[in-house]
Length: 322
Image (cartoon, rainbow, N blue to C red; front, side, top):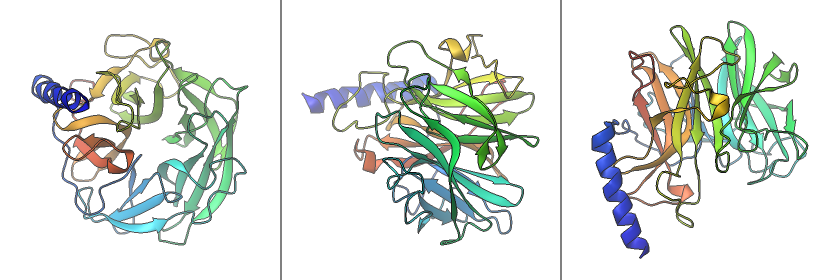
């Protein structure tokens, strides 16, 4: 029975690939198994670095986004200084470059818990054993908060630093930052889906042309090998846009992102299942690139089998198309 369900799902996904016209993921060589990617390019020599969940934030380097990716190790081999459960199992890294310093934000939490915090480490080179842990940014949550303080995304709007974050509960929030390591003031909601389990997370804000695009993941992210979600309930990547970085995001149909709006950018197709945990990188050769993790149905559905995927984005219609 389980096999026939998967076989049927694979056939439907193959049809969706043709109907929707999604491009296949770009090439990846070397260390391509990973979860929750964050990619950044070193200014001095053009080396690419990719950070991911696991091994107290594992990271790898490559000469291009295609690889070959070589694992370097952990940025925080002793775990986080934040005294919360999960300090030795850090999640969802986010790498940014601000004023000559590389920052990697990370989540301290446990699965299904709202007892969470966003921490940050920094390095001026990103070389192994050069990372300094600064602990909490001041963005924390517990069961008194309307949000879950995980899945950080720092956005630099011309020197005005904004932190986007959140998962489930009240979904996505934003807070002004005093500095790259410290929150300045209270947060406000920027996306919420009132339907179902409120499964919205992994915010990433990206400016292209006159608009700010809020990318996010929606649906069930994990554990497909143990509990297969219903058709369409698995991870997918959506987006809303606004002329302001601080709110007013709507989808292509004009539905507010705080009222369940979100235009699908990438979903299951062909052998690609449950793409998400996404971000956008401006490649000096390729231009805007959407990258993410996904399950290859030809390989397996386990979390440890997820792969690094990427596609070039076309914004010519005013909306991101891969």
